[in-house]
Structures are given as structure tokens and as C-alpha cells.
Length: 131
Image (cartoon, rainbow, N blue to C red):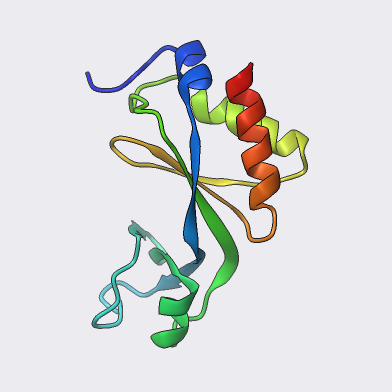
């Protein structure tokens, strides 16, 4: 097992880092990812391939997109089996009237929050970590 599993430890030891770029979500048919495009994430769904990529990259490759957002990385190594970590964070962001699209990486969780609301999201995350 890799990463922290204890919810209280995860919440009090996390810090958050805002990534500089503006990201967007897009979808393309399987096999139609434009040559030279390197998305931050690709996920294959029955309807197509979901891409998370920078807005600049989407525009440069003429890829239609939705949901301009900012990426916040949670700097705590959460176990993939950890229970309640993202649920707790999503609930607190929801209480602030904010949706979030979380993505779990092997080492960290990443939150995609609406562009323009990143400062609010960071304040909520700081409050959570402070207990």
C-alpha cells in the first residue's frame, strides 16, 4: 500500500498548489487526438476520449472545449484506497457553492475548479487543513 489512508491525517497535512495555466475539458472520437497535442489527462469513455488540456493547447489545435478551470494540486500523498478525503473536500466546496472535478493521480489528487474561483477554493482548502 502506498500513501496515507487516515482521513484526519490527510486533511491536516495537506497543502494546495495552484497550477499556472487555465485548463479546459474536451472530447474527441477515439483515435482523433490531434498530432502534437499532449493533454494533461486522457480518459477513454464509451462516447469518446475526454481530454484535460490547457486552454492555449485546445485553441492552438482547434479542439472545441468547455469548463475553463484552474488546477489545484493537493500536496499530500493520499492512498488510492483512502476513504472520504475527496468527498470531504467536495462537500466543503459545495457548501461554498462551487463545483469541482477531482482527478486522482498515483501520488496526489488534483482539483479542477471554475476559472475565477480559484482564490475561494484555496481559502476553503486552507480552512480545511487548519481544522
